[in-house]
Image 1 (tube, rainbow, N blue to C red):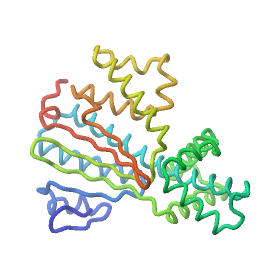
Image 2 (cartoon, rainbow, N blue to C red; image 1 turned 135 degrees about the horizontal axis):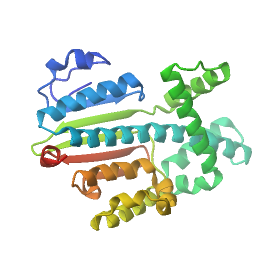
Image 3 (tube, rainbow, N blue to C red; image 1 turned 90 degrees about the vertical axis):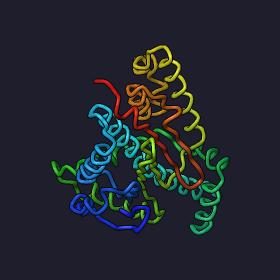
Image 4 (tube, rainbow, N blue to C red; image 1 turned 180 degrees about the horizontal axis):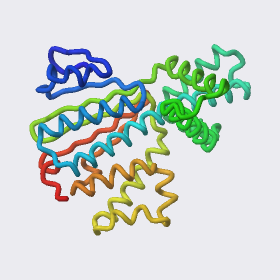
Length: 281
């Protein structure tokens, strides 16, 4: 965990064991390998210690941490989805004759991924439901492995090992930055995979519809069945993050921002201390 000035690097449980050495700092930077239970527990304790410094009440802490975990899960899914997208696209390029040799196919793939219009256009060659199904399968297997309730069979182990290899090959990482500013808590989550342009547009449209309901004090109605299609296409988790901001009396379109580029996606949270401290039960 490098911090802003006079950096100190701590790993895993060292963060909590040596918290007194960094407790008075205002900048924290975490590299996250996966959302294992120990990782979630460490993040929970660290965030709570930071929130205690600003006098946040427990309900505000709950909404903040819930949103943070949802955003981190989206980052994990985003990186996983991008690995699968690249593999599927590479196979399509080879099978369609667009590139006859593996090296040529890899070069063409990188050109596509570096160019947003091409990257978005290539979605028509990929079956979204197949990617969604594969990502869900991976998440189930990873949860199964984490909880150790059921033993993975050889096929499942090989499947997850292959995913780890590809993730390492593409160098996909997740980082979490937490900063105590004069009047607000600032959080940035970054994962090394872009959101497709069409998906980001759906997310924004859905969030704006949620905001329209919130203006009339009806934000909770967004989760009714008649909004199901919008919610599914834009991300149920993002809607839940927005709802947490509404519950704290904040406008998520002003305090929660998603930006994407050709190499990464970043999520920004801004929580005014006043909102964290004054939220009523």
